[in-house]
Structures are given as C-alpha cells and as structure tokens.
Length: 160
Image (cartoon, rainbow, N blue to C red; front, side, top):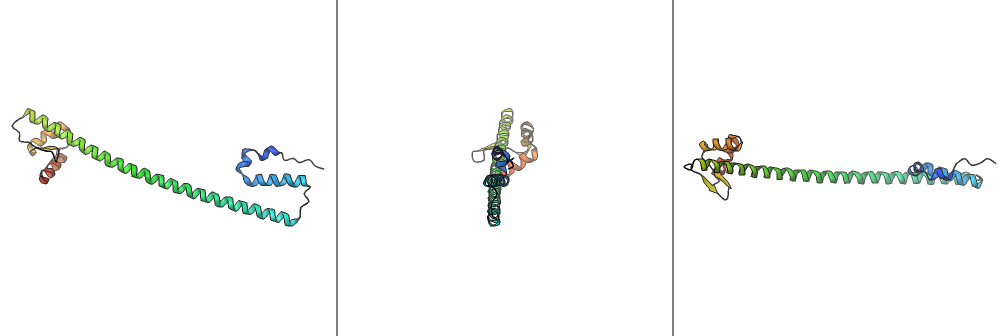
C-alpha cells in the first residue's frame, strides 16, 4: 500500500486558507485515501456538484462584497467633495472678510494722515466708503488692485 504524500499541515497553511477550492480538494483526497477510495460514481458526482455550488456561492459573496466596497467608496468620495466645497466657501468668506479688514485699516491710516478727507462708516457694510480719488491710495497701502476695491466700494455705496 502506498503512503499518503499529502501532509495535514498543508491544509492549514495561509495559502490554502486563501484558496478554498484546493483546501477542499486536499481534504477530499485525505478522506479518500484513508477510506480506501471505494466510492461510487454517483457519490463523486454529488461531491463535484456540491463543490461547484460552493464555488458559485463564494463568487456571489465576493461580488456582493465588491459592490458594497464600491458603494462605501462612492459615499466617502461624496462626503469629501461636500467637505471641500464647504472649505472653499469658508476660505472665500474668510478672504472677503480679510480684504474688508485690510481696506478698513488702510482707510483709517489714510484718514489719520489727511483728516479733511470725507469718509462714511456704516455698521451694516462694515467698510469705510471712500471717494474714488482717495481709493487709489488705499489700494496702494492695502496691496489690493484698485479695480477690485473700486468695484466693491461703488457697489456697496449703491446698496446704501
């Protein structure tokens, strides 16, 4: 009688755990070997069918898991996009407020140097509204382009 060459520890190796099909084959080989391999064709066909069903079930489970992972990834991407949009809006708001404060500081500086300059301060607008001739000096001091400031200030003056 030949000796069984398949070792039991092979079944428990990580490679065999990953590949279930070979693991079941090794188990069936062991059981066949030790039982004398006296099985009928019907039993072999039944086992093959069972193995095929198991493989199909495993494939279906893998597909379901892949779909779930894709859905989770899509949800995470959507959340990240929402967060970036919120961050952009926040940055824009911060930038606008920073620009307004910079114009305010520059206007106060210009006013201190030239007290005769006519300025209007509105709490609603939170800006010193300055005539366009003075606005050029303010733009130089605050390092903002004159056109942007002029447009902002005139539009805010129209709102008043």
